[in-house]
Length: 112
Length: 116
Image (cartoon, each protein chain N blue to C red):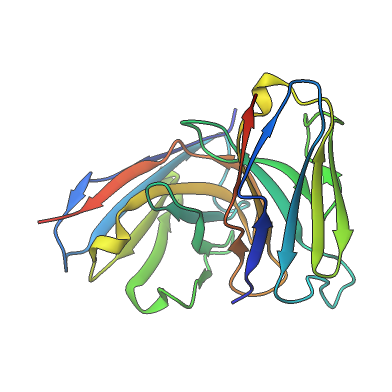
């Protein structure tokens, strides 16, 4: 199975600052069709996960443009500019290129 | 308004079979696929399997031998059955619209504890 390694495990950020989360894959996530099926989810405390980013850099409907996904191959990054209180929770990367689909281990974002 | 809601027993004995139901509203199961995803307490997420809009299924190879997903389109319900439960199957179980990703609608989840 593809292993997604997220760093850091936890992150404490001042409101208004930028946060950056890395997701490294054990295999390239570029599929034979040319697309890269790497997504990002946020699980707020006590809630179900919510989709933020799909295909590396596409924001899902309603997701603020403060959330920026980037990367290729095996290395991916989620940047959150101007962190707001509602951004706290656990962020997961997810790959659907290889079967079975797998999630990263998560990065907990805390507000200082 | 799309909604998914999981239901099932909160406690299952070891070696027994888990049966969960995901009741959906605001979408048709004949044109939408539904996945099951679980999360052990304090841990990460695991994709378990999917029932496609055409009724076909795909399972995570790690649990494929124990898992079955089916549906009743007339009742807008998706079912999960998993046998030979062990303590490590204790988790929050979610259903979500989506196949291999693009999980845009999720249920609230149902907590299942495996214990005697």
